[in-house]
Image 1: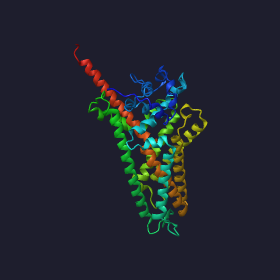
Image 2: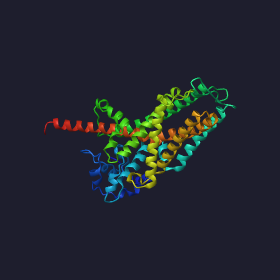
Image 3: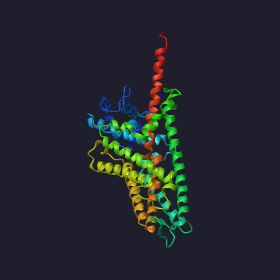
Image 4: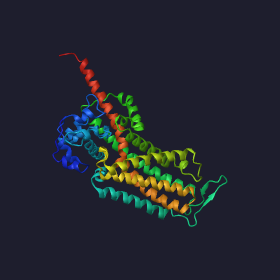
Amino acid sequence: MSYRVNSEFKSDLKKFGIAEQWNECFHCGNCTAVCPLTENGFLFPRQGIRVMQMGLKEKLATYVDPWLCYYCGECSETCPREANPAELMMTLRRYLTSVYDWTGLSKKIYTSKWWEFGSIIIIALLIIVGFLIYLPLKSGADAMVNQSGSVMINSLVEGISAGQFVRIIEIGDWTMAIIVAALLISNILNMFYKVILSDNAVKVPFGTYFTEFWRLIYNFATQAKFSKCDDRNYWVGHLLLMTGYSIMFALVVIALPLFQIEEIVPWYNWQRLLGYYATFGILFFLIQVTIGRIKKQDTKLKFSHPSDWLFIIMLALTTITGILVHIFRLNGMVEATYYLYIAHLAVLVPMIVIEVPFSKWSHLAYRPFAVYFSRLKKAAVKKIEYQRELAPAI
């Protein structure tokens, strides 16, 4: 299969990160030798960098190398040319996110601060206006104490009971979740097409799709390949973030009627324990990466794309407002709880709508699928080698 060289690719890629350093690489092989994720026959990350240098955009779209990188930074620390191969992988990750996204929004969000900030502000304003117009706080809203001593919201929104209010939020949550899931799944299918179906050199045995599928679930749940890097703390932080956010997302979207109830349950109730774990996991990661990006001592945290800081800021605001909503509610501060809840959703909703299908959160989905697709490709190569061995000598 022939690929067309794009001489303008370098200037396009610069918009996604620090790709100006790519020409410093002269393929000495040091990065492949020191990478703990390197496997036999897998020239990681040299092969992807070479294709990038040559401007082979179509071929690069079939690669999963950047997603298999867990950004430990060892390759950049030992690179004799200071080409920073680790950050090149991160640049390619942002670029490939835009390649998979059929809407074109990922490219605009990653390459334009105005697009990213503007879309977040617009969605936040819509949330605030929608609450103030359609779900206004009832005058004299208060709280009462039931027989067990738990604080319950007696009246919150004009003409709507607390239970009805939760159901309205639940409908909004499910609507948002369906839209976001549809966008992300369609992008993953586009990734599958480009990585597997459009690569004529790959013919995956049908049964392999099923026998290797467990790797997708396993790597998503454990981030296991992270543990191969020397810095185990970063793996722990990433695992806590992934599990914490996944739990919180499931509670506030899928199980909202069970999680956001009128009665305030004891601290040892399952919903509060899960919420506390999720909050701890997210805060642990936030503190870890924020300190690292400020100090810039760790190779993997020396360079920050604007999207990296925006992700940290929005996640921090979401977590802090969520904690305060919980504290205010425990103390029966109805008005403060209501208005802070609006602020919480004004940060949370745009973060999910923008980050999950188009930016940083999408990486949590692309990475395990990349591991899965790489296994499919390896199975296809093994099948070809096996057929060659069986073929009679000519």
